[in-house]
Amino acid sequence: MAKIGERLNTIGELREVIKHMDDADQICIETIDLETGDTQDLYPLYVDEIEGIRLSDGTNVSEIRFCQMDQKEWGIKTK
Image 1 (tube, rainbow, N blue to C red):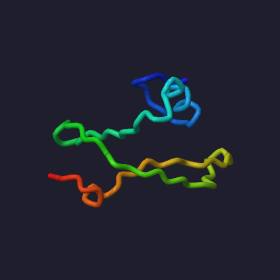
Image 2 (image 1 turned 30 degrees about the vertical axis):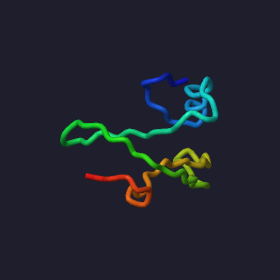
Image 3 (image 1 turned 135 degrees about the vertical axis):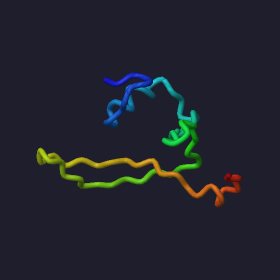
C-alpha cells in the first residue's frame, strides 16, 4: 500500500492513506508549473466518474477524476 508522499494509483491506496481523516477534512489538489517549479492549488474542484474502462489485460475498471473548476465562477481572483 502507498504511503503519504508516494504515488497513488488505486482507490484502495487512497483509502489507506486517508483512513485517519474526518469527513469534514478538506481536499486540495496541487500541481507544479513545469517551467517555474512553482506549486499551485487546483481549488475549487469537482469529481467526475468514468465507468467501463477496459484495461489491456481485459479487466474493467472505473476512474475517478478530480477536475479544477473555473475559479472565476467562485469569485476567486486569478493572475
